[in-house]
Length: 233
Image (cartoon, rainbow, N blue to C red; front, side, top):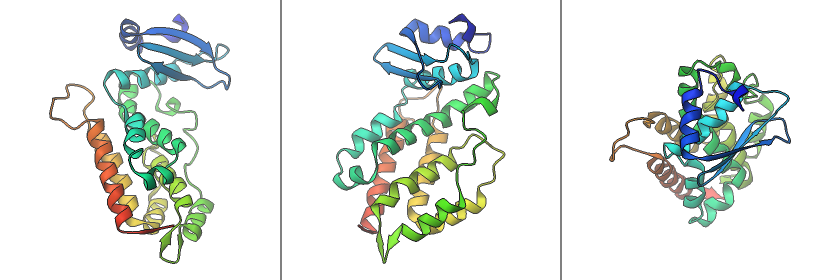
């Protein structure tokens, strides 16, 4: 698909081609996506709307695998060993967390390549939190002194969406303060997850530098501490 390649993403495309067998499929949702298994990659594209920025975004997800970032799969495997946490945190949330952590590492590269920040994600202009959501969290997060596990999943998801939002024009400071008051410890744990991810090196990572396993391992240990400090419904 030469129409999706230009001087900005050509080197990345060449790198991926060298290491993978690639095929293209039509996207059923008109959204760009990629699926990888071993050295096989399928890119899902909209042939009626060929967008270099969206394709580059998907290539950068592949680049994360090349650079050995496996946030989502690592979190899935780690949580599988804990009965309560694996029941609280859904597969959908794990996918969302993995995707957002990928985005944190991808965005600087995307911008350095010369692409438009506003085209990094489709919902770039969507404010990632509403007053109604926060009101619902305040109302239902706790029953007495016990945490409602059904609310923990969307609560974490909302915080992740806000802290990983690539739109730097949005001011979430008031929302963050409100969300932080609902569960200060869990908010801090998620904030540490985001900040730890930001600190990881993509290039020139040494053997003893932190990596995705360190990030997910610390997140898991912090979640276990959170459980030990709370009564969970």
